[in-house]
Length: 348
Image 1 (cartoon, rainbow, N blue to C red):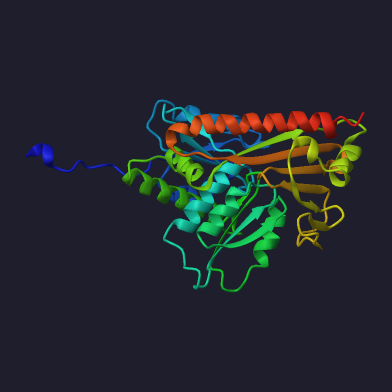
Image 2 (image 1 turned 120 degrees about the vertical axis):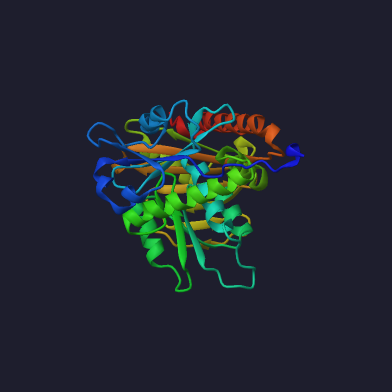
């Protein structure tokens, strides 16, 4: 009979929160149920929130059975999540994957109103983030706004939200995540969301990795890559070529729309309709194709830098096919950038 007894599963999440030393005195840091590690902002650069940034935290928990690490930049405005893969090796989500995870957890947490009910939760996403986020918001009947990247741009969109919105979540491809404009409360809300999610997953004998893969199966697997395509003295010429002669036929792709934020014109090629984008003017152009490919080109730093952002998707039918599907979409994006290099980027 003993063998028939239910087995108790420990669903208490084991997490580490990685914070800058100035956050030591905050109420949240002292009351947080997770272990804390504080880093010296003079010694740890937060220019890029990536695996290297989180490495001291990952070294601290090495060999221990942790479920997640939640890290924040010097200003508590940007976030990075570390998670164990099936081999118990810790990895980090990129900004696109992290945004999808936050959106799904935020909207589907306690169920979402039906189509005929008022929407009380708002998601604000930067336009460069993949359309997987759009699918998550639509599927969960969420309120939705687009924004340019950056804390101030996201904040401006939050400030203009409708009166009926009770909760919001805003993020971009630079790892900004905003759930509250009070920085300490923002950290607390993000921690609570991830902690609650992991607790729920552990009750189902799942992990953050499983949750991530489930998102790829449900909303299609999206791949994103960013390339610095700066070329001294040629950046403006390359940027304008994407704007005025967007690649299409030579790539065997059907161009559907052009969002030219420099000229402040949105053009739907299928309908011939032109309109003005909601967002402010900036040196960026976005090209969307019928296949799902999205190309975003950004001219920054007074023309000194030029960035190419690619996003596309493929089908992922089950957990077993995830690794292959991920490799396929990344290989496709590399082929796209090679094609663009021949057609557009090499201005000479």
